[in-house]
Length: 382
Image (tube, rainbow, N blue to C red; front, side, top):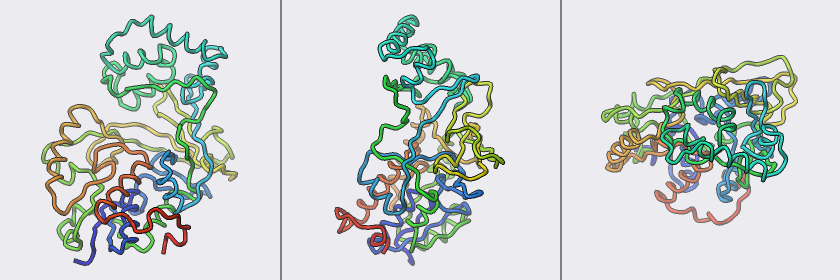
């Protein structure tokens, strides 16, 4: 066998594992079905603007170890995610905070906002929420639900909120401060120059083959390595023998505009049901761009079918039970290790992907001898 590990997928999970294996003296081959690395965090430069081809990705974490790790491969800017919600021409700050409530009700103090929300919840008399609509109403009241949750959620899932299970929304954070920072994490930013360069640096020194469909060449590729790290869809690996796991997908319409500034913010959500797209991303604002043109992407949520890009697993009772059966099959494999969001049928933020890949590396190969030492970026790549 020519390699210690065959890594299927050149996304963040596979790239971290490849980097850590190389540091420990192991050899890896990475195969990727697409014609580019970096998976869904892939960014492509258009007119000097880093365009997030598969949707907006803002790195955020409270894990210092992960933050220091990822900064070894690129410098991050100080971007703070502060999305705007647009409902029938009205603009509201997200997450739900005092700026949102002040705009909605013309009030100024936390007590005023709390009293209005409490009064609306009490008037609804919802004891045990039977669906997503009742769950949301019992958490935030009618006004916030109607303007900022209902239409957006129905577009995301392609169903009326009354037909969606309540567990989809377990909580809705309400902030009674004037703070538009969407994330509470200590560290946040966008890699300067884009995510593709970040992943490229992780993969330095590792052989990568693009445009290779692993499942179509499984036998010959498996023969090259002792173990396989598989980051694709777990049900597809087993040829859907137990059934098909469900996902939601996303379609993007991206265009370059001959203007400097289209919407004044990186992320604007369109929360009314009548607008077909869920949000518009203006990519240059992630890096405070000053280019004379701009690039925007409209996002449309859609039902997933075989052949589409899977984005969000539908983690309801039926699908979780099916995944558990696939997981039982996977646990019996001696050479195959399933990882990442598709291998684990779970949506992960980027910091959690990195943490999971590092954990697997330590389980497989042990902690790196100098793991506790700080290293500068150049030393780390050697």
